[in-house]
Length: 567
Image (tube, rainbow, N blue to C red; front, top):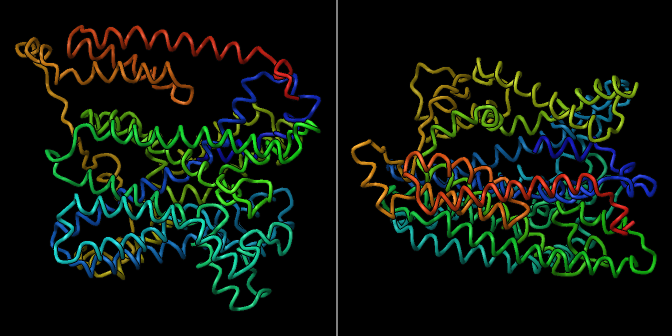
């Protein structure tokens, strides 16, 4: 997320896409400008993670004998607290809030627009969707769990599947209803950058201020609950499945999740291409050759609401569904791969130990999202050194330098902050409030724990030595049992996985990195499971895939965009 946001806001795309420069740029640059916005649209990835972990938490409480009523109270209070802090983040403390604007004007602090907080508080982002989903899912799961029905996981999964389809089916009617209630919502412009969906405190009426958060739930420009509540339900289903006793979990769950995600992704991707072609026709590209409207439309893939005719009349009615299926199908594919590589491979602890650099960003994920103004500081100094002025747009080299310096800055601060339990972070404020206010949370602490300590993040038990869960245990292969294990088809899971990953890497573009995993696992499986046809094929195919990928990368780095004749 941090890397994508840096590229989006710092890379000088205007210069890169100008008529004089675009034809001399390598095709790889155009490929990056296609892939990066798509990855920027994967907000559902965070929503799935939140919903799945939230469901595991709810099941843990229910299995401990907590009442359904306490569960609902906990979820509703926690969700509303998160929602309040989401509003504070977007309006004031966040990187596009008033404080972020201050760091965007370090060369002229007087230019800071503190009035941003008056309207941006209602700017709806993924964190708002997560907060509302915690509330809605808490109420729904509480009702579904009454009279011990939470124990029947099969029926609950069926209920969430049905509700997911219902949410998607109701999306268009809900948007039409909101448009009838408030014509032009949410894209009517009040002032430059200020929409009717973000009314200004002190300017718009009291009623317009009060209704705004609830209208955004239904039809926000970026990630409204219709249809994104369906994504949360998908995460809830995943949470129900992985909260079962390990022996009851279907060992083929990652494969099934992958196939469902792949079906959604391919359907969405094909439809996205059709939509872009339709936009090209309706914007006059075939006549004028002006590709800018098409590029602007595609770059908006991160903003779900902009893929509707409510944003622009030339956008086909079904575009939102294409965007929804493509980005969220891709997110499900990523989760299926992660599950198969980690929990369903008995590698949780090993993976955790090797990914501490990345995982540390997730320990206080909300705070790291809020504090992205770190890269404004790095950008100001880097730009001044490279171009003699702060906040100048940079080419790929300068942008890469800002990325490296920002990640280093983040890592140092988070590592030091960890020593005091992240006191003062967004997570600390939220945990302090909920752990002191919510009865079921307050009961976890003894009387000797001070109020401010209840919000600290215990890095030792949550980061370094957490409760690693392996759904499939990796068998220990001893010399005297190796021959017997190798002969068993059911135990050649590593070898089969190497073949699958290698094929995915060879046959796809988005998942070429799986070839690297396929190669590494093929080599490792030959040591653990002996040489067999699976890892032999995996080794050969992964090497072929990597050679092809390197060849394509070299070719795209040398072929100029002008050769394509698009510009």
